[in-house]
Image (cartoon, rainbow, N blue to C red; front, top):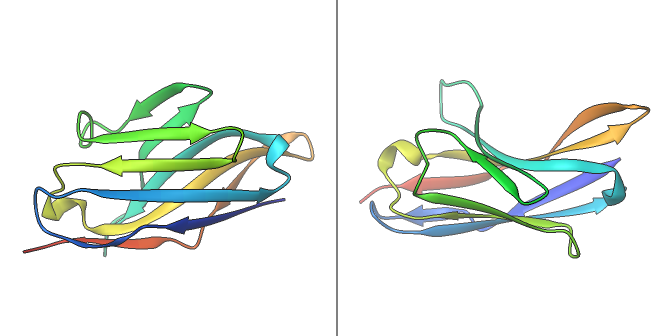
Length: 118
């Protein structure tokens, strides 16, 4: 199994920046890729960014503002968020897909709150 712990959330003004970090532990050698999701109140959880090896993909709403990175040596993933907007307010979750019993399984962190408000 894989355990994920996020850090770095908080309150920021519109136009500001935050950096989220996710540390993986456990059977990290089984990790296939990592991602960040978010869930706003009353909304479905949505993927923000995913990284496979060194290839990132982004939701249209965050392209050119957010950057996902992954350090394979430290088993961490960061999400640099710039030019934040009130619409970005949500609980952000770190996700890892890992091979478990021959199939890709989703693992989740506990989530970290990001609030964009003046």
